[in-house]
Length: 569
View 1: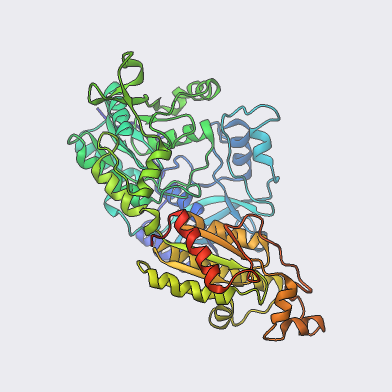
View 2: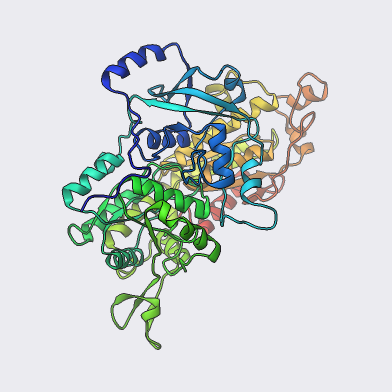
């Protein structure tokens, strides 16, 4: 039995031959270049390798509006999600229809050229207005991030030179043509795809096995490894977890292949879009859940669809040509020592369960996680990626007026943390950073923000690597401090300490004479005098150096870190 045909009948691979590529590369030297964002790079990869067949490039305006309005291309082909290239207004002003541009990755490698057919400015809320009429979400979960205000959409066909470079898990990276060849080699012709952005535990695997048995198909674990939502698990850890699961699976039952897709989080439209992509990769079935598709949230969740989403998917089943199948909720029955569908569990039987919150809590605390819940190899991998809090990196961010005592406390805290040991400690004092990292910056609001964000970036790298960063800038603006917090928090701990010494006390200290110069008008935009200090609203700790010595302030911070679980003394 042959594999399912690609969507539209033919796989649209857009790569040039070697001879054509040589000729076009020479021309591309004279083209304007656009550096692709991570999401755009994912889109380009799937356009070039045929994953988005029958598309031959980024949508023009007519296709875009037709897809948003009717979920169809202009030629009538069902296509539920816009695939557009958005560029800055300043870049778009240099373009004209009929010209070509070079599309490059972040390092400047030429990935493709694009022949421009359309340039247009979509309305700021065009997609959400069309897809979510007031009072009724007709498309069940549509949350597509429409083009930002001021961005210009560029449409046109692509000609590809080489796939974007991936140096990780090359053994699991297959184009649609390569995966189809693998299926033929293994003799598979009915394949159910399970796409996920979270690690899989035993309940998820048992559900997947049951789906595969019900539809008499082999199983493809196809994790999404493109751009995902902030806070989602990094794909390196997830893929290593999936590899453990493959080892535990019956031979020839399942395989693993990565999908470089930038998710749109578009509810049932997303599910339909994923079905098209899966068909292009050679799959006949797609596991789809209500919010498509986050299996990691709770192994006991209800994966049923709401009626409207189900109706929309079923309405286009014949056109999609791929069957969508739901996961069946499974639970571990203690008396039987196995997972069972919840509707087959007898009254009085004991169900064992660990919620996602409890699992994360056990993981962070280094507590035991039973083998009935997850595979030992998966747990071990997640422990390495998400160590207990006392082994995680963190940043202590001291903020306050000049002369408040931040540097003194930061130096003392650094020494104390080094005395405790266990992790490398780095001090990022405001004056020191100014000298070595931001010497070209002035003291305008813009330059102050740049300086703080540089400190935040360095601290985030230290935190991500499991170290401790102690930062002591003035950081007068709440929005910038919030940006630094958001930069660091997903990577480890962030503890904001407001050194709340009052202005009059700071002026009395004024060892450098800065306040006096600011009062005399010799220093412009000086924090606390001619420029505001925005007091933190919810810092983890407030310290007033009028009421405590540096040693006492450090002791308060250490106690806070102990209470939060970041250090053990």
